[in-house]
Image (cartoon, rainbow, N blue to C red; front, side, top):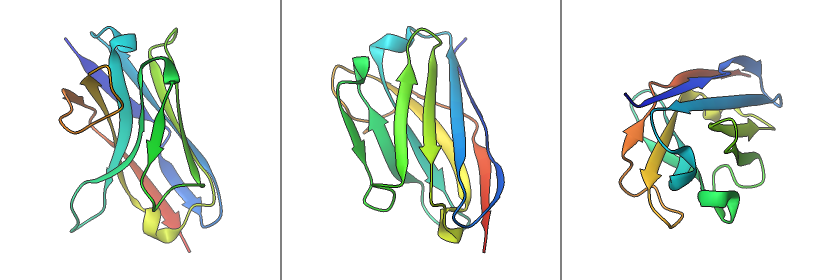
Length: 122
């Protein structure tokens, strides 16, 4: 049974930082491109970041580039998202996703986590 379990969300003031984690089980983690999406109330799910197998490639949405950093630890089957300089508009539910691919894409994720809430107060 595949499970992607996000953690690390919470309430933070604008300008602060949070680190999200996504623990994977039931998959061969190193075979998957991994990444993060978010969805704010009343908005569509938005791509944030992707990291390829062996961490050879990363890509970010313009909205988070320079503030967020995606990383992975294949030995721990865990994906991370370090979020700095948080803004109120970053408030959303954050989801991790996995896609079995040799590339660095999350165009059609195979698996999704349940999400973790991030709230940034002004």
